Image (cartoon, rainbow, N blue to C red):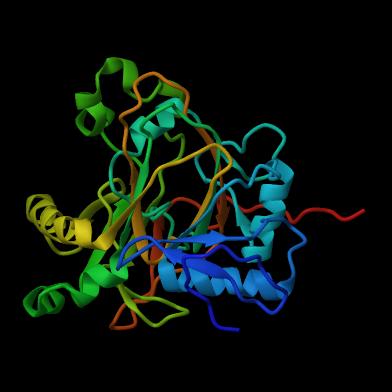
Length: 316
C-alpha cells in the first residue's frame, strides 16, 4: 500500500499503489498510470491523497477525458467543493474558477490560495485546457521545508506572530509594472472585502508539519507591527520560502492536471507568454482554519466566513 517511486511507468491498481516520479528533492512528483475521474476506486483516491501529502504538489499528464463535470466530480472525491468567494463560477459549472490569459498576469505574485478567508482551501485542482506555445509555467514552493530550514532566531521571532490577510489591494501598486494593458479590468476588482487573521506558523492538520503561512498577494501586515516593519519581515520570510531549493516548476501541456496541498505550499505563474492564450480551470477543496504553535486559530475579521459554499451534486 506504500507509494512506489520508480522511473518506469506502471498502471494504477485497486490496492492503492501509484507510481510517483519525483521532480525535485524538496517538492513535486508526476503521478503516472492514473486516469482521474469521479468514479475512481476508494483505494486509488486514498493513494492520490497520500502522494499529495508527501510531495505537496502532484502532476498528471494527458487527462483529456476530464471535462468540467468530471473535474468537479473528481474534486468532490477529495473533499467538499468551494467556489472562489469573489468571482462567479465558470458558465455551466457549480464551482470552477475560469483562468483566462490575463489571470496569469495577475498571479505572478507568490501566494497561498484564498488566505483572506479564515477557512482557506485545503487543496486546488488545476486543469490545463489551452496553453501557449511557450511559457506560462507555474512554480510552487514547499512552506514546510521552508520552515524546517528557517534559522533558529527567525523561528523564535515568528512563533507567536499572527498576520492580516486581505483580498483588496492597490492595483497600480501591485501590477503597474506589467503595463496598463495587463492591469485587472474594473469588473474584476473584488466587490466584497474579506479579511482574516492567521498564525504565521501553522500546524498541518494531517501531517503535523509546521508551515509558514504568508504569501505576498494577500498578506498585509503582522499584528502588533507597523506596515513598514511588516513589509520588511515579510520580505525576509518570503525570500526564504521561495529559495530555489524549496521550489518546483511545471511546464504545462493541454490536458495536464496539477493538485497542490494549499496548506503547505505557495505558488505563482511565470508570465512570459505574451498575448497567447493560456486557459485553465480550477476546482477548490474546502479546508479549515489554521492552528498556530500557541493554539491560535485563524479568524475572520471582515466578510462572510461561509462565502463560497457549493451545494453537492444532485443524484439521478
